[in-house]
Length: 218
Image 1 (cartoon, rainbow, N blue to C red):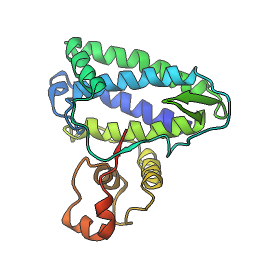
Image 2: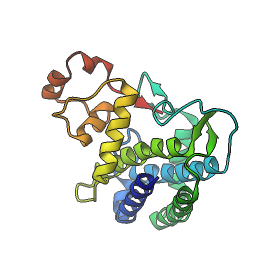
Image 3: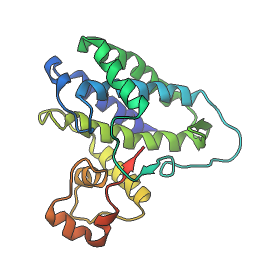
């Protein structure tokens, strides 16, 4: 729960520090500008708020790892929701409006997470999870998108180290294998999710596991 809050706060602070002119740069999320990514974070915050007030009965059907669906190919941008986010982001016009909306909805999502009962079961995407597992899944979401945000902005603050470590651990659970110890947490996340191709040295370290990458999460 605390790591969710820390990762989310760090990501929102990083967005707050992005200069207006940098909202038009390509982010590390394929096909999205920085402004598109920030608009997606607004939608994410809304999803958190909706899920935390959608209690579910019955036993959990998913945990923080099985919450994620693994696709066999990267997004093309043709998905209706992806296309809608691009149009919404462009409609904001002034980056200050986008920052304000993220701060407004994002702060509410952060407070809701801090107040939620970790053992409560909630429903989202036809899955039932505990709040603790749901928020843990979102640590990976925040960390990957923090890396996406800062990809074109080398001077921007990185994700919290503990968020990187936890996200790597979760990605390894999703993958069903551990990345070599020589991989930093950041490199495991970037190469593991297809945000960049493994280097020749990393390919050699991975061996046969390289054929199982990238893990396209959705």
